[in-house]
Image (cartoon, rainbow, N blue to C red):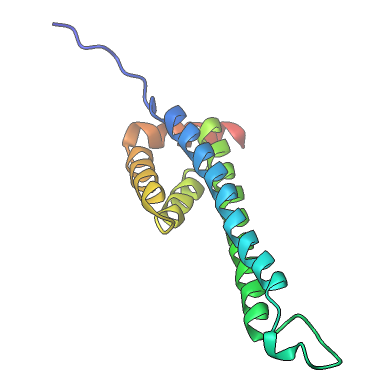
Length: 140
């Protein structure tokens, strides 16, 4: 019985596609932050409508706008870093960066945990490490 030769890193293209999907989902998740920002601008302070210098902001509105803005910023940064990791997986370089982004993605929910763990396991395989090392020395 013959055993088929399997190319090292055969799963990396699948992980690249999954990282792209995760990046798109991060961009879509940033829209939830937009909901908070809009709510912060829409909700007026009902007790302040009697004052002549009426301003639609109160402490709750400010907190909603700040929280939503930070949420949007975090989601966009995560999306950009995930897209960069997908790019580096496709180029077979910067294994350390991919591992760090995989660890950070483990903090972002079930899909991030599964993708992060499997990506770390795949990149830590000796034949895949050798593939990344070969590309690192070739690019210098």
